[in-house]
Amino acid sequence: MYCIRKVTEDLVWIGANNRQHPIFEAAYPVPRGMSFNSYLLLDEKTVVFDTVDRSVQTQFFENLEYALNGRKLDYIVVHHMEPDHAATLGDLMLRHPEARIVCNGKTVNMIRQFHWTDPQNAILMKEGDTLSTGRHTFTFVNAPMVHWPEVMVSYDSTDKILFSADAFGSFGALNGVLFADEVDFQRDWMDDARRYYTNIVGKYGPQVSALLAKASKLDIQMICPLHGPVWRKDLGVLIEKYAKWAAYQPEKEGVAIAFASIYGGTEAAANILACRLAERGIPVEMYDLTVTDPSYVVAAAFQYSHLVFASVTYNNGIFTAMENLLRDLAHHNLQNRKVALIQNGSWAPASGKLMAQLLDEMKGMTLLEAPVTLKSALAQGQETELDALAGVLAASVKGEEPAPAAQESQEKPRGFVCKICGFIYESDTLPDDYVCPICRRPASDFEPVQ
Ligand code: FEO
Image 1 (cartoon, helix red, strand yellow):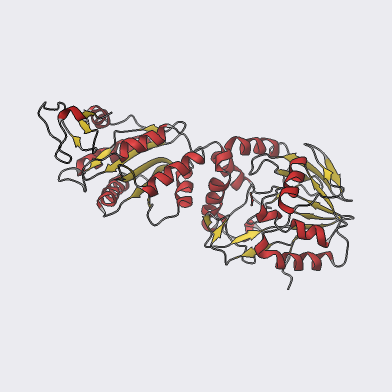
Image 2: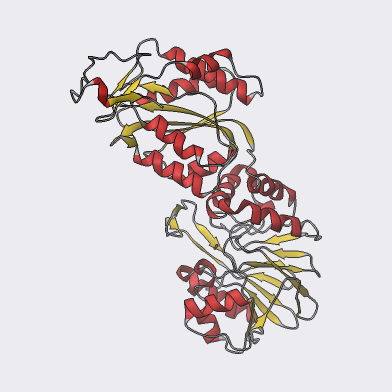
């Protein structure tokens, strides 16, 4: 049974929602479901703007045939070839062989790759080319890497609508609503819009900025994305967020703490640090990486100005959940954050140094303090180190100079590490006759902690 909504007098939403697949793109949890938007223009010519994911094809084709009401299909505009939009393109070409594909050269190659067919009489669009459908004229604008290289958007200069492909989309099914002004977007959708942006196109900030610059020259009254609600009011709400996200600027001055704890010692330290920050009036969020999908933490890392990573040492390295997160953040090109670390290791804490190495490979990541080191759990009196770290973080969040404690901590002796087993002897000097208590190797097998 068809289920469509009018966007304007001659534009119809013919997309569909999937609430049964818990994972989108084999990677991201979507507990609120996912919408796959497609639009049909009923002008002198008829136009489908993108198709949908295979999982919702039945609904899509019912919607299309009902809305066409027996008219032939003249054009299929393909903005983006990723299969969550183009998986059903091949079927649509078979059902409507009369329709001409409107796309670019890169798209044609991908149609061949995905669908083993050559689109007949395709109309290839270059930057700035136009298509007239009667009352409407569409201008095509390239948007490479937002989110694939072939992506383009189109602008309807008649009704001032931007068909934005993946840009300005969101996770979440459309539960009867179509427009962003039909929901409390800030309260109910922004977190998923942020998680969608940061995880899907977060890596491509410069390309998103380039698209925003092109869009800023257009009089846009409506945005029709391929996921999530259509925007017809207060477009600046999401456009301003995109400008920040694309520039890797934090939205919020505060601290996101991500921790990976096995038996609770590291978590306890993270909890205490969070308390000391909250007492200082600093916004703080905590993420347990052992039970939280990394996509949520990637979104938080884009949102917050300051990040704390707390991890146990595992197999002489970083605990898997934390290592995965840090590599994920690097892959998403996160940059320009202030960072603090907590490491734990019962006999050879190494995660702090290794986390710092991974952060060092990312742009503009500033380590505020030497890592706080736990040996199994917080030692008696060690709460003062967390209090001092909270002070440094709070001062930095408030834009104040680092507290003196931060300088002292950075200068404290770091000891000597056993090259065989990783045990750390904490002292300024190492006795010549020292023997490693773990592996029984002599002092000659130790080296200064870097
Ligand atoms: Fe929604 Fe890049 O596909």
